[in-house]
Length: 319
View 1 (spheres, rainbow, N blue to C red):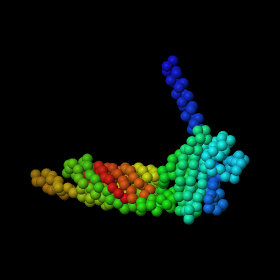
View 2: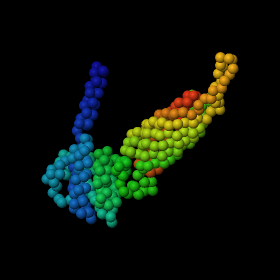
View 3: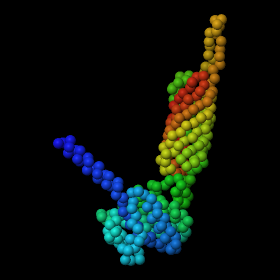
View 4: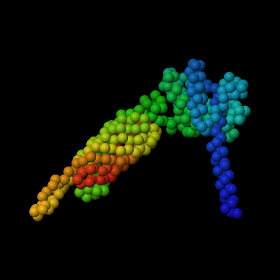
């Protein structure tokens, strides 16, 4: 009986979760209120916000026609009015959005309200440098509403607004130059050394989800390679995996391999300490949307030389 009771409980929990997933949030977007913004720009901004919100599978936007059938006043800027309209339209949430002119800037203020509890879910503000930047801002507002988080949390490469790009740390990183330092931990070869210090210089270019670049470094000798990284996220915290290929001139104390020939003499054969190097790496880029990034890198390198050098490399750096 206990097993059956637990099974029934789990079944109802599953049904409840499934129901929540299948039933999207019904949101009523009230007509945008504009102060000092021309009618065309205001209506275009509202249309962009409505379209962007409709792209989310967990959101159902109540049509503009149904909204205007309920609204009895020209404007609804107060919470009480928004709750009343949301209740009449059987909406889960009501959204108030205002556009305020401040010189050339446009201040976008929005409030998301839970209709049943009558509590504010979000109270946010964003700044557009001018009218032309409103498209990017409204797209970010839609993401903020869909995720129920702040406007600043949704900064991604490709949707940075002008105000953010003018900050001291500009979020416009594309071409990167940097250095890192750390240690090489040999697993084979390297004259059985325990570890050695390494410092490396990087130059790369980000193309959507990839970073392609050149690395030159002092790694128990000198290494030069090209690398490619796959970037998992366009946000501030970006994990990555990648590979590298190049040459590594490894320092070795012993260069001769003495072999006994057929006459009983030892002949020395010079061993090659340099060779093609292949690397497999992973790591994380922090402050990825800024033009000053921190990164942590972990790499396994194999040098195809006579010593069969292999090592793990752990570094931290800045781009």
